[in-house]
Image (cartoon, rainbow, N blue to C red; front, side, top):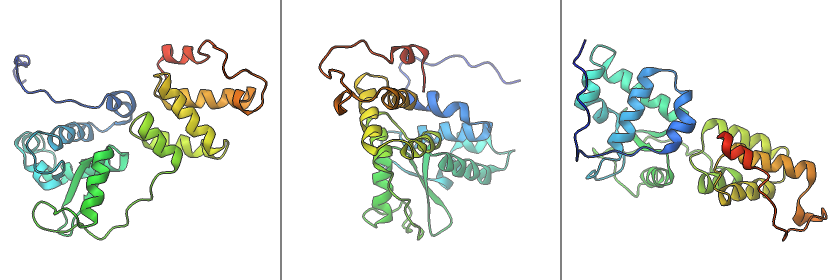
Length: 230
């Protein structure tokens, strides 16, 4: 058994992870190796001093912590498999390169913009090769885009839930519900969905339902905040 960790040193450089990773993604990752690689990637890609907030899969696999960790568990091929899994999950953006490697970005607004610039040829890939010829995924629908603007990172589960909602509600309702959830500082799809269900049952005060839109009301979704819905 290895010696117990002696604790974090005072003044050591800290690394920040998005809170959504813990509230929306962590519980979905069942593969321990995928979790290890994902956490390391989120740290490594965003380290200060990098010329680009992106990292080759091969470069990441060669870094000492991962190389040591996976020396007896498939090495670089296992790291690449886990990076591809993180890309499929939506946590990372994994862009194939012509030399068989891949360029990895954190899946946030900045990462999407950076990836698209690489694909368009506006930025050079580290190492001098081009991105492989791929078709960039279609832009999200307006409600999905508003979710990312107002709530946070769009996970596959939330994207699926929004797609289902688009079959039941007008687009404007979904957009307004997301913005109301953000205004009430209850940034979750479940909260926005509760708003939609209430509007469906009771109607909207601004659409001729007889309710006074200017009247002050208690927050009808308060119980969702305290229950911690995602």
